[in-house]
Amino acid sequence: MILWKSWRYYEDAKQPDLPSGLDIAIIPAIFMPQIGIVASMSVPLRNAISRLDLFAGASPEDIDAVANLAVEQRFRDGESIFSRGAPGEGMLIVLQGTIRLSIVSVEGRELILREAAPGDVIGEIAVLDSGRRTADAAAVGPVVAGFIAQASFVRLLATRPALQMPILQVLCARLRDTTDQLESIALYPLEARLARFLLWHVKRYGRTRADGARSAPLTISQSAIASFVGASRPKVNRLLAAFEERGAIERRGAIVHCHVSALTQLAQAETVPGEVHGGAGLDAARG
Image (cartoon, rainbow, N blue to C red; front, side, top):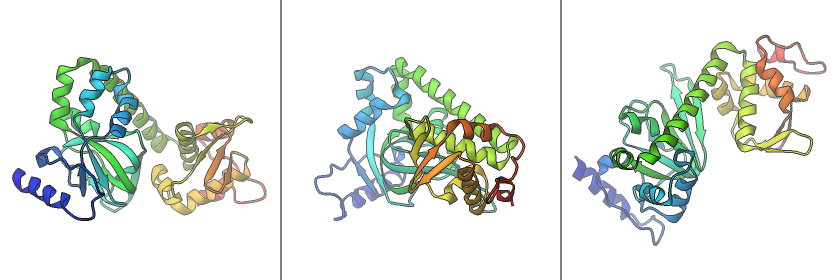
């Protein structure tokens, strides 16, 4: 089976639509997920690895050792990268594009857990505990990522203990984020969940304006936001309009300006605020 899959990757690598000058790495398929294009490790990939929180404080030698394990992979828009329940064959470092992690219920309802942007890493949980994938992952637009095989990475950690503590710290931070997300879904109304999502988004992707507001590009669709907060798209649309009327946010095309103090109040509310004067209020947005 391994030989057959390796040959399939070799056959894929010979297709004429590959970029010219691309180095092809033929390695056993047990170390690789199902993909369309495989390439050797590049300088941008090594630089991306050196900036990861996962390897914060690592020596140049340790970074080189990690980078030497990495293989560049490319995914098409909408392509499945891995599925929930699949074996954790390795982790991926996002270089270009976005990878969406989600869970789909038996009724077909999707809950988006996270969108990994360039510089993020996904799949590390299954790599470290040798378990199965905890979510589905799919490309949002064209994606370039670096793949590190599970077996190779575990062997590396055993020989380079300095890499272990930063990884534990990142996993603890992920656990805190997951706890916050579960708290939002279980204990807070939709208005607070949406406010928390916006605060998280501008904290991660935004910058502070002179007036103290934070702004960030909001390229994610309202349908995706709805999946993040566990609501329908029409409800999210009405709530965004209500937030804007209250002065909590300003939308300018693809940019959202968030007034942190106002959003923080909404994010902490356990009861629904009253109707906004002059338009669709938060009560109406619940409908």
